[in-house]
Image (tube, rainbow, N blue to C red; front, side, top):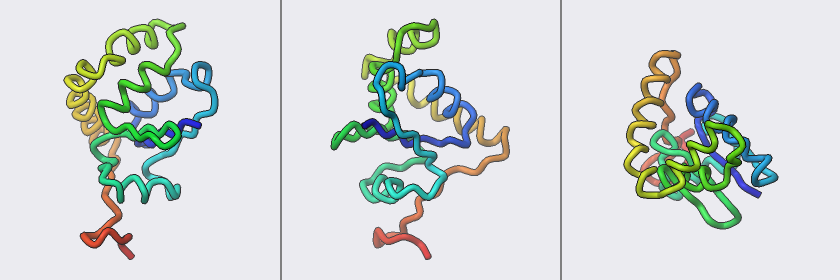
Length: 132
């Protein structure tokens, strides 16, 4: 099972995940909106993954974050569309995805502003416990 935690309210993030056609390529995928109350979100924050700064991909017990997550998704996606072929060719290389990821984050921030959405906020306080 592959779990992807991403900002489902960001139109760019949502479109990117849906265009990858991961179910066709990798089988069972669980998409988790980082704005939901899914139990895995608290664990992601507790493990130091700032969900406002990057997506998380979990494959079994292995966790990928940010640019590394994008590179893994690019390797997992199909190559049967032009988008996926380009995505695979460019972003499947970790060095390239790492250099391009800051631009993706900036585009997400702009998309949130333009759509009136707020940024994600870490629900944990300094003790690592959920805010009440």
